Structure formats: C-alpha cells, structure tokens
Image 1 (cartoon, rainbow, N blue to C red):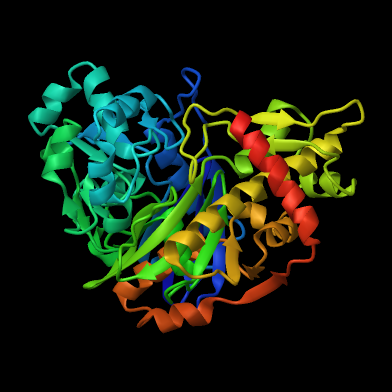
Image 2 (cartoon, helix red, strand yellow):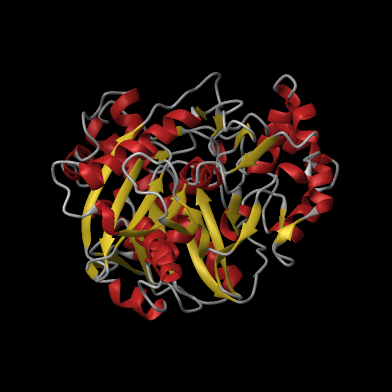
Length: 494
C-alpha cells in the first residue's frame, strides 16, 4: 500500500502543496494565490484567514483536483515550510485572528529599531540571536501589535492570545487548536530566541516587552507535533511532523548536508544559506547566523544572507509598469539586447537587506539615456537581482573562510537561464540547478517523512536530489568588474 507525504509551502504571495510518494516522486500539486494588503507606504499585511483558505484550496487541488494522482486516505504525514518572520496573533480560546499578519517585508518598526540601536542594544541582540536589529524580524512586529492594537497587551498579559510565525498558525489550524508550537528554525528569526541555549531569552523578551506566555513551545524540525483534526480534505489523525522556515527547508531539500554546502533561493526575495555544521559562526560582514535544522539532538547552523526583493522586482515590472504581461516573458525580452545599455537597477523596493542593512534605502535606476528601451530595463532588473547575490557571496566567504565553488539554486526565478548565467559570471563560481526547483517543499516533506518513518535518514534525502543543469562562468573579468563598479556606485545612491 502506497504512503504519501504532503508538503505545505506557505509563501508570501501564495501557497503550494506538493504530494510525494515513498520513492520521493512528485505525485500531485496545488497552488493558490492570496491578496497582499498595503495599508500605508512601507506596510505589508496578510489576512490570516486568506492564508488558511489558500492552504485549504491548494490541498484540495493537490489531493482531490482533476489531475490528482494520489489516494488521500494514504497520506501519513504533513510537513510545513513557510514565509518566516511574518507575525500573527490570535485568540487562544477561539483561534480568531486579532489583526492582519504583519509580513516580513513590512518596515513599520524602523524607528523602533533605530531607537534600540541608539541605546546600544544591537550587540546584545546579535550575540544571542545572530540577527541584527531590523524591522525584518518578528520581535519588533509583535511589540508593535501589542502596543497599537486596542486591548491586546492586556490580553497578552493575561495569557489569552497566541503569537506565532506562519508555521505556528498552520499547525494550530491543522490540529484543531490543540497544539501551539514552532520549530528552532522559525524561532531563530524572531529576535527572541537564544541560538546557544536553543530557548526563548527572558532578557530579550523583557527588552521587547513580550510576555513569555504568548510564545509557542520550541521543538525540533522533525517530530510528531500533533495530528490533523477537522481539516477539509484531510482525514483526522494524520501526523503533522515536519516544520522548517522556507530557507532552511530549501537548504535541507537541496541536500546541503556537508559543512560549506550552500544554496540560494530566488523567490519574492533571494536568500543564500551556507551549512556551518555544529558551530554557530558569528558574522562580521553583515550576514545572519541562524539555525539550519534540528534532527533529534543534532543541531545544524547556517550563515544567511537575505535580500528583500528578487522575484518581486519582476512582478513590479509586470504589475507596476506593465512592461511584461507574465513573469516568464522577462527572459526573452532581456535576451533581445546584448547588454543593459549601461542601465543599473538596485531592487531596494523594501530597503536593502544583507550585507548593507539599510531599511531607509529605496530602489534606484541609473544610466538611463534616450536609447534605453524596456528590454534594457528588463535586463538590468535581472542583473540587479544577481549583483545583490554577489554581495552576499563575498560576505559569506569572508565569514566562513571557505570558497564556494558551486552554488545550488532553486525557486521560481532559478528557471531563468539568462539570470543564472549572469549569476555564475558575477559570482565566479558554478551554478547548479536541480531537477526539482521546488526544493523548499521537498525539504518540508523530507522532514515530515523522516519523523513518520517513511525515510530513514538524510541519505535518502541526498538520493532524492538530482542535477538538471550547470552554469559556468564565461564573462571576461574586466567586464565583471565594470558591472560591479556600476553596481557599487548605484547602491551608494539608493
């Protein structure tokens, strides 16, 4: 009798559900988008109920849609991977959301972060959490909610509400409100979690005025957290047994199991992670130290570089400017010119992330002339995405002390051959694309299946990974240096 594992990949603009069999063959998929809400400039929110409905819709498409190729009764485990720092609060008794989720891209707490930096608190946060004081992370978003939603702080003090990142909220909904947990990877993105004790920090909770009682229990990335109950389309009693933040799940799904292995995911933003093994390597070059995953008693750490805007820049060309009508069109348009015609685009639509950490930065286009066409702009957008990643790799190699000779890639934009070739050129290393680019969901499925006994260890995961194409540097070094010179100048002006 077949056994299936469901992976819920809850992302920033939509939810994907993939179903894998015991041989790690992808058997079914579903996808649902949901709305983005922008109440003010710099603010980004999601409706938690719309997130949940997108999960149910994608589950229904994957398990019961016209193209479904699985028996839903044979699903034995569910894994979750999620947009990470997005912050939710809900009523402990009813499960009702108490405010829209504040999305990881949201910048409303920039002033709070600036005040804490001015009070010389950043070093303390960085030492404990591996993170910088930036609006990106959950802790300041949670403080904002407690301070600005009427009655919420008083209810938090009475223990009447739950806080969670998206994984916590989904586990709560999947288990019928029985379980309030997160895993170490998501906890490590909150500014409240001590990387060294692997627990919530009382000191940091006090600094951010967060009551400990509203925080979820912190678990490993692969264990039985609870069982499904009352979920449309899923039978009751299926174990929910894998959780990892999207980027850590991709690191796992890319089989980056050796120290020095690295991957980059091109989604709404772009995220590079390197496995640093059992050592939490502190960054001196603007990167983050984070938990990669925890299996049993074994903890794997990672260095991470995050850029806030990658694929979202292509969406902006499509939705904001109307330069293209579908995201896929950008490659052909950009390839219709031999170069960007001297145009440089800095994709700082939500500030600059690592290694610059400038929340006040804004997107900029330089080098425009009367001869500039939409094709030049399209190519410059792709180059800007890649040049951000070059900044990350330089910082990562400096922190880790080891060169990256091959970078594994995944996410939607990794299917763009022009982008991947340019990425290889400006990094000076090989780019390796897997056959299944949805490695985030694969990682969640593997973590869930390991806990359920579907697979025995990471060697099974390593066998699942297969290379599809490899890109090698081919651009003359002088040309690479000219791109980087123009990029540096533009970043300074962003």
